[in-house]
Length: 313
Length: 276
Image 1 (cartoon, rainbow over the protein chains, first blue to last red):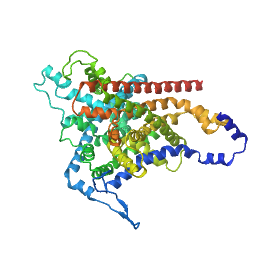
Image 2: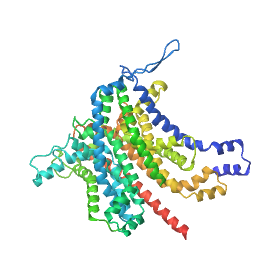
Image 3: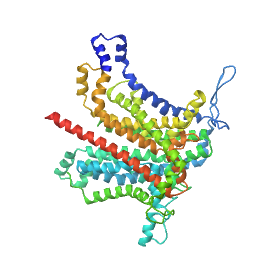
Image 4: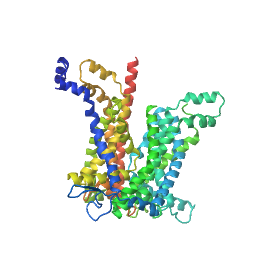
């Protein structure tokens, strides 16, 4: 059906429409995703920014207008900086941000310590074993965070499998209190984000040129030195990409501290959620989100830099 | 190089995989527990699964989540593929950097920020345009925004490695560029499209944080219902529901993996044929 139309295009000299299509046709492909992501992903950040300068109000939606036009067509802009000032005066925001940073940092380090040998091991197996092992790692990667955190709760709660096993073995006399502590939050993040660390690490380690290692060996380098001087430096892009994939989302984690942590484990995601749904203070919540985003720009830029580098390699 | 893995590496690998799987296996095991007390084993039973069938709240939420998942994954595959074609085939265009950034950012952006900003957009849009009302539509739009990013990444790599000679041949024989693409390259990336459809479906089905923000009254997805139940503690019917969801997602991922692997093998075979 369409081929008939195409044939006429070829036999007849290109008309103005065909000419236009040839020159601008690619925009028909580029524009839909570009516009969609622009409107529904990027522009929302602008809205959050503007609402962070608004004031709370008892109405729907619960904030005041920043722009207002009076009957004489004068436009008034009311910027309210109180929300940002509030972030610095109430110490809960600073403390929760620091706690989030600390938790995300140590979780990332532990994920790296477990994930690196895993990725290295997978990269050293044969191709067919590799694809099976990768599938085993990817499966939990796609399984719901919520469900996996819930599953972890079944292991570490007071009457869970871990305590039952330790009690039965006689290693402990009383059940360990893991739930509602920082330890539970760490376990939750490491357990949930481990695949995010292993996959990018594997991608770099797999591409590693083995002849370099052999050369190092031939020149008398012991394996551990070859590893430190060849493998490790060459896998830096994977280490950075994996660490950022764990670190950045972990700072903003909400589900894990809410379900596993106690009242003291205030992470920024939880504060944001409570501000929004509990206090219904949308302007302050927006200000928290914007401040949080500003602090994330650095790590995200690092990630983008290394991931595009890896794509080009 | 192969078969020279030290026992240390093997044990770390095994421990890592055990960490990933033991909680899930224990959860599935307990979902067949006859006892209502989650810590006591009361014998094998499927009663918690049949109880799910009589729980209207869960059934409604499941139906809503499935509907959202189908629309989201279809929309994401279309938009994500267009973005992938743009990035792979059109090397230079205005907005390329912007598109690259917007495709990569959702992968690392904390969901809670994406959720909050999108909600603020929808609320302002509703005020000015009278559309969209919070619920099905807003969840679908918000999910497509992050799922299409995953689709683009998947399709992009497949498209970059696709052989363009067939497409060029078709164009030499007089096909228009779109027609040539549909006849030659599309079939070769079709498995990548199918697997990214399945992956978008699982992402959408699993999402809690973004849905909670952009949803309105009366539209609770399955993860939202589960979350409100889980906050109260471990309960046997959630065990059953969680096991079902893990099973469904697992099946989707395995099938997607199978599709990708089959094409990979086909590609290698084709390459070997071509060399002969």
